Image 1 (tube, rainbow, N blue to C red):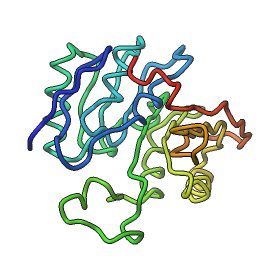
Image 2: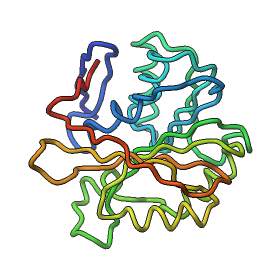
Image 3: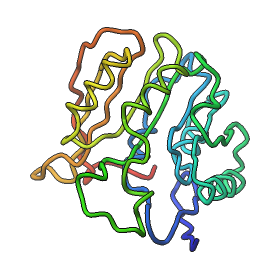
Image 4: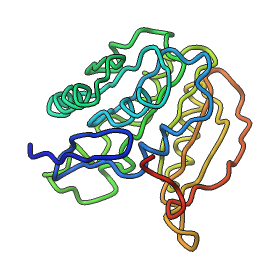
Length: 218
């Protein structure tokens, strides 16, 4: 796999030249206000490890799991951890290997699209589209996260109804929604959704993020 070295202000990361490449979502997902009492964190579908690395660089978190089942991406994560002198991130290849009832906070930037929605290029089949259903992923996460723990996801607005349904089915109450816009006159590109384990849904719509004004890579 051919790689690009991307040099941001806070981190340097390798990612594939072709196929799946991260965009703005990891930087917005990793921009959190309060990390008090957050010791155990998981980044589900870690890709090249960008979210786990950002969290390690920005906050004093005891232990971060980078969960990725693609062997080529596991190698990239390992290289990126060395590149950034990260020693509190553990790479594992399955959600099932996470300790039960252990996580304070879970991050995920899952693929937005289902395979039934598009004609699929074989080149990108395993990278752009869901390989595990949203329902299965949330069911597995619900076993691993503590009572009162948070899950923070980036998701496409066209599938929010499905996301809310599956979160509720797995005992997560939605707490905040934050829409993301490229520009002020455009439709929303994604939403950041936070939900709490074993809590009632009580939704706050947070101030939108406009990427044209956002200090994305700082």
